[in-house]
Length: 329
Image 1 (tube, rainbow, N blue to C red):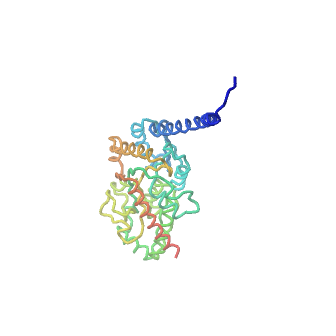
Image 2 (spheres, rainbow, N blue to C red; image 1 turned 180 degrees about the vertical axis):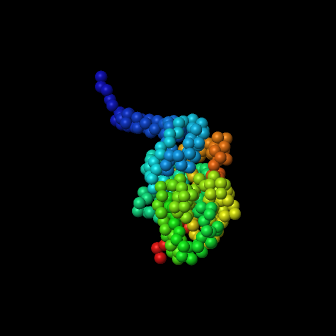
Image 3 (cartoon, helix red, strand yellow; image 1 turned 90 degrees about the vertical axis):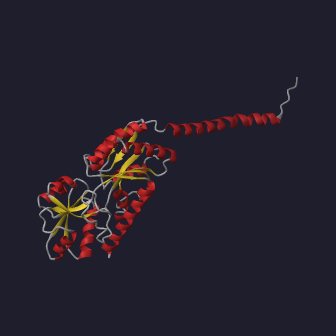
């Protein structure tokens, strides 16, 4: 008996042998990818913090995390990496896989000041992140001891122009730029004294070791006790806690160091993952526990979406560039 082989059938069978597994794996891969997106999150999420434990940002994260866990149904693990005004944590976030499992609590200055003032030392740019949800704003202001021989910003400048020596406790690279800018613009000499944080700056002011400093929120207790006074808001608007004090922007200076805390993710995070994260963050931010925390702190609610966060970053970057241009003249 002679067996005849149909070459066309053999070719079709051969192609099927090779193509069906490939097609099957493609279909399976597509289904798996869709399932992964549908089931996000399926494991713990890391929340990076770029400032020291115990500070305002760390405390804000500590209060937010349990509420975020409830909304996501997964543990949220805090990872504190202080350094460079939040730059270290931001760099880690930038380089993380864009899968929604590594996010960061960041401040405006981290992405609007560092890349402008220290471009060669900042391993990221503001465009390297997805901006999810705005949380709170802090009350940055220039302060002096209550018995200082001036009560307003203008009086402080006049006091310095009269030849009186003034010193400023600086906490960040911004402080150094601010003092350089003021000295150049006003023709005065304020001495910059580096300090290690807000608590040391407050001690320097209360102890009479320096005349000026900035505060980001740990000021109201000392203000209400009559130990310090405010000369100007470093936000583009007046502070809600001291509405009679003008902002430096209002006084004609291109200065904006107003910080908002917001959640960022690596660039390229899928839209559906961003949507899930954003909805959970909003739920956590609007929770009773977080609202109670806000009512007990000098911070204020600053809800914002991605477009609003980006607009505020761009505005602050523009003012920082103006300051740097004047200092470089």
